[in-house]
Length: 148
Image 1 (spheres, rainbow, N blue to C red):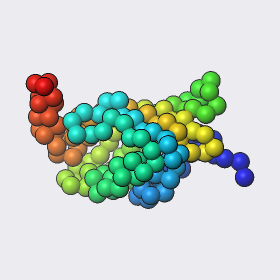
Image 2 (cartoon, rainbow, N blue to C red; image 1 turned 90 degrees about the horizontal axis):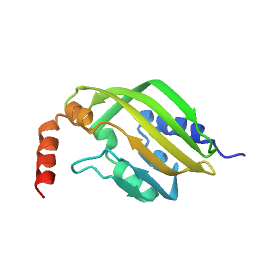
Image 3 (cartoon, rainbow, N blue to C red; image 1 turned 60 degrees about the vertical axis):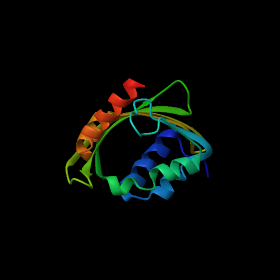
């Protein structure tokens, strides 16, 4: 059976996210694959190295955010057959507050043999903190980082 294309792998990732199957989602990563979050601030990691680090990071995700639908998805193919750029919107609710969750993402996904080798996720940390009710804490952590 041929391996999945980068787009097929990403669409599978979204299916597993909605199903809240974080173990299967982490299994989409190559053992030494990375996840990068260039816009991450505060206590959020900027990089995860390896499938098990991704698994650990995702373990509590369903307790934070209940993603219910992906109403917008655009896949841009690149001149590299192993890489796609995906724009998507996630809707749902923040578990702790019950507040609506709506976030736009741009993600660059590189795969090999159907597994993610590099995942770069560009999202707005202020929007996430606002939905989670943690915006004051995030802003406080930014002030602390500026002082150092």
